[in-house]
Length: 446
Image (cartoon, rainbow, N blue to C red; front, side, top):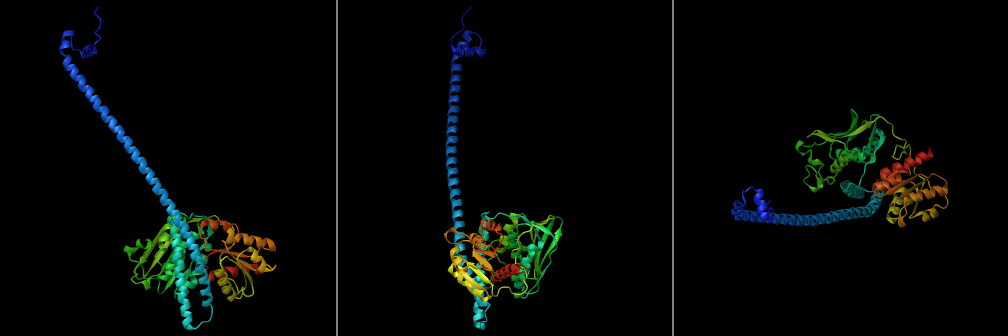
């Protein structure tokens, strides 16, 4: 038997079925050419594959470099935002301190009998300081809302707990504007964040009183299934239909042509929109030009009753319990101590002032005060809570106290919840300050 050929070309031609050995030899040149073509094609594919792999590798490196740049840019942006927030918080705290002192001093002057010309100057100063306070507060709130620095603190409240203080607060505001204020509060309970919902309704009421020239404002509620629609009605100028959405944009005010006509900076409803989105509440506005507007927000109704909590909102007090009362004011700002002493002294109080606990103990001379008014942030990283607890322990007496602070952070508010004392933000509104002090002293006297 003949031995098979060792030539691979013979094997290939055999596989291709080219017949006898002599016939196969006649096809060698053609097969060799075909093999060379296949080899060249394989080399081309290999080259293309290598080029593709290199391109993928290069692109991967470019994407990695781009991702690193994006990470660096993101980190830089986050650091800038954090720095901005810290700066804004620190700057606002420093701005609120002298603004608080100025507001208290001007309020002291407003309560004194002055000639007409001086009284007009005092009123203009009061309005200018009030505008500065509103602007600063709105800017702080917008910044915190945009940075998601505010977290909802949901709880159950009687509706009158939320609407009652607002009715008291805006009764005088409406009267000063020559308007009537009506309030209807059904006996229902809602689940909400007290502070955030109050801010929404306060903005509604403030705008209603600000842009209504005559007539009345109504604060009420309508039940809608498992939700409650809180409404603020006014008889103001109204809003054109094509501008209803624009009123919720930042720094937007309608029909303001001159600086003298500006009332605020147009942040109030932008704040409302952000808070409502955070709480997942629906805000609606209906309006007729020349007849008025209705702003409303829907909140969840609940059947459960709220927990018993300390009553820190001002309630009507019979008579004037302040004259002759011994009040201690603790603040590390000398200007605040002087202005608080002037205002409280004008209300008939005996006022003792101190920048810290040690000085407070000295000026008290072993006698407990009737009430303590203390700033939250004191020198050397001390806080007002420590002063209250130390003095209560020293005199073995739950002396009534009020915390006053320019710190509007959620962290500060949560720290104070367990202490069970009212919290007032600087700049302090003298009317609210007097109402809170009167209530606390009245409770002790009663």
